[in-house]
Image (cartoon, rainbow, N blue to C red):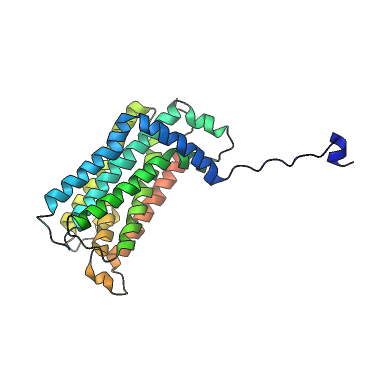
Length: 266
C-alpha cells in the first residue's frame, strides 16, 4: 500500500533544510539589529578605527613618500582589524554563548557554520569596509601607490579571517565576558608588536619576523607596494608572508576545534 493511500490522501514531501546562505543571512540580520543598539561595540568597531585611519594619514603623509607607505599601512590595518574585528568578535561570541543564544540557535535548522557565520557577519562587513577605507585613504590623501592591489586585497582578506578565527579561539579560553576583555590583549599586542618589530628588522638579513603575523602582513604589503611587482615574477618575501598568514589561520582553526564551546564554561 502506498503512503498516499494509507494516509487517505497525497503526502507532502518534507520541506528541504534551509541553505547555509539563507540561515546565515537570517542570523546576520538579527545581529545587525543588536549591533546598532550596542553603543560600546559601535564605538570600538567603527568610530575608533576610522579615527585611527584619519590620524595615521594626517601624521604620515608629510613624513613618507609614495613608496614608503607599507609600514604605516600595515600598522594601520593591524590596529583596525585588531580593534574593529578581533576584539568585538571575541566579546560578541562570548556574550552570545553566555546568554545561551548560541545553544538556542543550535536547536534550529541552521548548521554550525551558518550560526557562527551569521553571528560574525556584521563584523566581517565592518572589517572589510574599514580596511578598504584605510587603503583608499593612504592612496587618495597620502599619495601612496599600490601596483599589486590584488595582492594587498588578498592579504587584507586573509588577515580578516585570521582576526575572526583568533577571536573564536579566544572565546574558548575564557569563562565569560568579564575575562574576554583582558583575554584579547595578548594576541592583539602580539600581532601589532610583531608588525612594529618587522618594521625595524625588514632592512636586515633576518627572517624570523616574517614568521610572525604582523611581519608576514608587512612583507605582503611591502611587496604589493613595490614597483618590482610590475614584473611577472612576484618577490619571495611577499609569497612567504601570504603563506605565513594562511598558516596562522590554520593554527587558529586548530585551536578553535580544540577549545570552542557552544555553552558557558562551568
